[in-house]
Length: 365
Image (cartoon, rainbow, N blue to C red; front, side, top):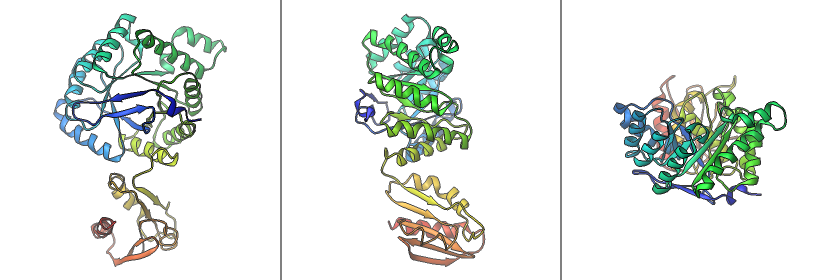
């Protein structure tokens, strides 16, 4: 059953970015979150990096908005951002109102910590007038006391508590007739994340933003996120995804992209196949991948690239690749579909010769 295709659809637009759709029959989108405070002097460089993230596959970027200065800077950034921006608001509803007036593409709030129902309604009314979606964000730290008490007494699970909290928050919007809503329920464990999103998807047609919160460092975070997201995506659950890592936004985006590709939710783009390296090492696989990974993922090509450490795993095991590279000693071999197209000698550490030759062959595809 493809729950994903049965959700309602919401639309994000902005002053300088293309319009994107969430839910319905739209593709699953990738989101990341900016890791540093906004500074006016850096807005141009941030916009450039947002463009690089977009090239890697990112569709939406969320920014923390802790005060009015941050709100004003986010508005300025939205005027030059190539991707839709989301304002992450806690406690002060006036920050949400300011971002809505300034053209920010989406607001993320937790109605439980915004304050009175009148403040929530003020945000909803403004969002409705501006046709801006709101994401209701729920995690284990935002479960109301009465629902949390039920968890502590054992009458409901923590996953059920997340669902009931999200349902309660969504009802506030339903009462106002506001349907332009996305919901996220994030736990720090894969199991709870899977369970709560399954339960919610079976009851509501609201698009879901899915991910494991505070997933951890690179390796642990990738493992948790892969388990949770692949399970949900295979059931058609999830309209947008985020991989939350104690690492760079680039690695969050690339991890999400690989998960979507392996789950059949994203088809196009460069696929990198590389060997882990061993004692037969004849080519610096790790160094080459580090130098080329982001460049390859940013290319608008539907190809497979193989990077192999020796002639054993080279043209033979990489024969399915549209282009590949390997080597032995000072010899470097570039091949296509298992057939050598270039072989040359390089001095140790002369990466420029290797990269130039590979770039030339790549450009011919």
